[in-house]
Image (tube, rainbow, N blue to C red; front, side, top):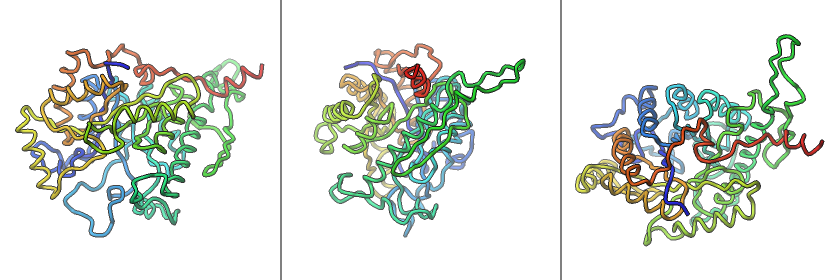
Amino acid sequence: MTDQVHLAIALERAGWHPAAWREATARPHELTSPRYWRDLLRAADDAGIALATIEDALAITDRFESVEGLRRDRVRGRLDAVLIASYVAPLTRRIGLVPTVTTAHPEPFHVATGIQTLDFASRGRAGVRLVAGASAAERANFGRRAAAIDAIPTSGRVEDSAEILAAFREAGEFADVLSRLWDSWQDDAIIRDAATGRFLDADRVHNIEFEGEFFSITGASIVPRSPQGRPLITVLAHQTVPYRLAAEHADLVFVTPHVDGGRPGFSLPGILSELDAAAEDLRTGDEPLRVFADLLVLIEDTETAARAAAARLDEWDGEPLASDARIVVGTPGDIADAVRDLAAAGVHGVRLRPARQPADVVAIAEQVVPLLRSTGTLRADDGEDSLRARLDLARPESRYAREEEFAL
């Protein structure tokens, strides 16, 4: 158990409320401008927030939203999350940059090299959030798959859909291939000895020789081993199958607990217990899985103002805001209280999803963070250079270097 947590933030276009772009404080004309993302991430960075995830998708619709009768009153279109992160990497100092990648269509080789490059650009602050599967609209944009995930089963259980189970097996292979490619160059593979004309020790670059259900890869990354060795792999998980994916392959998992009386099966003690069981069964190595709990937040100076803002957004959208995460509408103190409760319950971190950007990002940075810091709830930033070190994760050695040691 811990009473201190790291704080993360999840950035999503104009914010996590579908009507956020209509707020007077929003910047709808700048959602595709580099300056908009620079400003958001610098505000979070300056506040000392440990990491930021950046949402992404492969279609203009939201996941499982029908293409027919597409609503015109919601934000459509987005910038590529990996490229946003790469752009802001040299413009920020400490914050971890974790773009979202869908595992169904991109090739793991391309994702591996892109995230490695981000790790170099950020000087060791890169990660990736993997999303399993693909919707009908995403499949249509690529034209390579006849069937995949079109809806959550009526039972709500991943186990009841063969297509979703296959998507999570594919995501597991994807994560495995990423880590193998990141390991394919040993730390000392590059010699750079001009006198002898040896730039590379070819014996320290390894073909990964991976053969799985979904991928067959023989080769090495084109990018040398990056500052963190392996950038962070993160996933969002809500139930048993994704919990097991996280336990086996991820460094960090985002979960969505609800308070008593909330959604069944979303109690934090139950989530932590299931993650512990999955880790005991599947996890290798000594590094424990880091668990961050999600909260969707809307912040005003008074509770009355916050509820009025939420009601206004709901009226514009035509329906109440719904989310997989717990929604907290209130003052900076209310948000800080919710974070402290989660810290006392034993999570390693809390990820805040701002309902409105930039308004709630600014409120988090300028009001919530100082409150949490004043009560000792936030983990102190000890000045570590890499995201791994900041989260107390060891820098992993290349598996191929270990294999060489065992062979001696």
